[in-house]
Length: 158
Image (cartoon, rainbow, N blue to C red; front, side):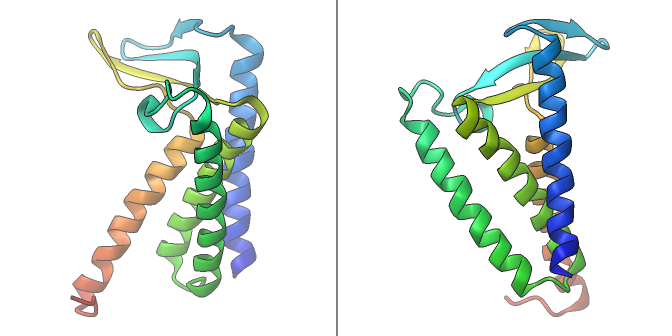
């Protein structure tokens, strides 16, 4: 069962890295292309964490976020081994693991994470993100949904 969850993570990593390579090969930094009235493709480099948190920290954040991603990935693999028969929980963990490693690859290789999905409403732009970020977010939502599963069955710890 563990191999199945690791395969899900690998698929996320491959999709993330292929999409980032495609954007990086066809756009120059800062270039944007309108796709719809609310969505652009844009090549952005995020040296910080989510929403560019700590992006101006002088470079130390690269190593802090690298260490956090490595520790989190090891912990997630441990959780996957322990809970590999819990399908929804493990699927969520696999998405988070794939996203974490996808962004970790960028941090190690470039010192920043490649972002390219830019959604907006009028003049308000949501922070640009990528496939790895989407996988992490979907994984987190699935974990929340999984946490309600026990309560529905009356088995959740209080």
